[in-house]
Image (cartoon, rainbow, N blue to C red):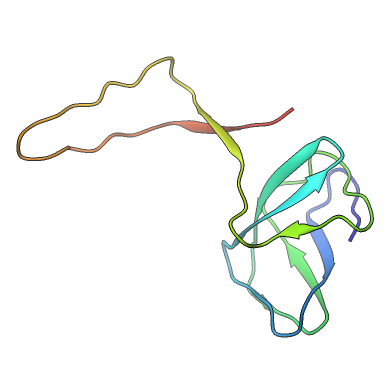
Length: 104
């Protein structure tokens, strides 16, 4: 695995039968740190897989980089300085949060 900054396709060496479903989330470590990616088309693979994903890579991915497919994570922040949360004895009416991914 290696890719240039701006790439939207990765070719992975994976175990036989691994499936990447539409909207599946996975993570890679770029030269600027981790990046969370979302698959744009379902792929069932043999030993290699060509994966297309949402958004370009923010930085290059070096050869031999591991791909996190089991519980990938990313840091997010609320775009508002504070969030009001209502409460009533009948239950919480729910809240909307406008989050954005934080990276360096």
